[in-house]
Image 1 (spheres, rainbow, N blue to C red):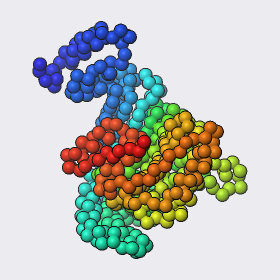
Image 2 (cartoon, one colour):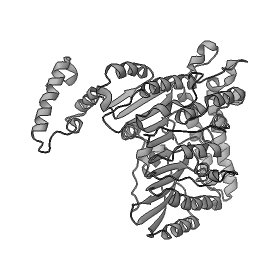
Image 3 (cartoon, rainbow, N blue to C red):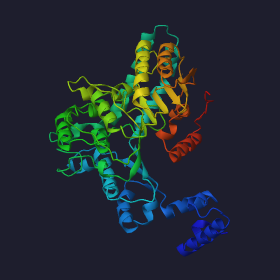
Image 4 (tube, rainbow, N blue to C red):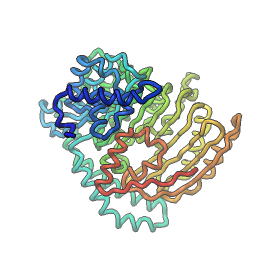
Length: 509
């Protein structure tokens, strides 16, 4: 048989699928089912079929504009769309004059996103309960920064080996911080031509958000067709409050004013981008949205600490309020658990009440205290306080994880409930786990006080020290929520090509 690509005539393609459909359906006593379940002869046929029926579509910066044409001309065919992946490539530019401002990363990102969301906001009907939108953000200017980062890490191996022999925990952590700070400085220096707002001279742009001046709310609110939104950032560059305003509903005028006033103070760290006041902003999400996932990684490296991690209690609380109707949520390296569960000091009794998540099945957050040589009592108190909030505020919760990872270390705290009477609590770290008995006891007391009481098993385990974020990803129960199945397979294949091991450790039962 000739290769599939040699069959240029589309009529021949359709005839082949028609004949195949007759063969499949003829032997099916229960009647026809989804055609895609049977077209699995080989990878080539499957990929063509998915493109033919628009089950899965992958877009980039340019194809996102073409999608508008496809949407209006082939609307009936894309009603069966289930998965839409958008790969946004941020451009590297010196930003030397006003003509180059359109290449600024947040502008490029927002132009691509807003154009796609404008189309999706007009999409009301599908043949399923919604689509999964997966957004990947990359930048071609990251290579130099990552090369420098890896070189610093290699040069520091000998020093770190000596540090591991120190007995004084504070001295050890100070030495580690000094090495990481040097790495961060080099990364910032390499990226300064890209991120330095001084390139705009004395006239910073009044608005870097290409939305109409009369727009009051984030456009995502109008995109009712999305049931799951996943944003994975594979770049060292921040996209700042634009991303938050895209996901949540903020007063545009207020945010633009903040950006204009804070422009000179903007630095590479997300803390300066995201750590602005969102007072008076009311977050909102589409009613159909049930899953939200955000994840940061850079070319497989465990995230470079202090480069983009943010802590903002007001922002964390706003996100928690906006996501009370979700079923699955993964906000790794985006929201700290302390900020997410923060109860503000307010004279309004309603503001001081713990939040209630009636439908939440899974939750993943980050906790900055999960790291080597962290203050043990602070970590125990934090983990213990979450027990009551989770058990009583999230009645449907099955999996809760808080985890953190840095240069050469990773740690995760897991709570798993089988939905009936058994619960498991696991604390896994790449360093020696110890001193968690107090937190475990608090969880056990809370769970056994329920009616009916829950049987609790606890485990502490040390896992191999990771060198690549994929090394630690299998330890996470929520890996499927962090990365889609397709992306996870692609990342694993890439790791094998680069000769990077991806171990799968035995799970506790």
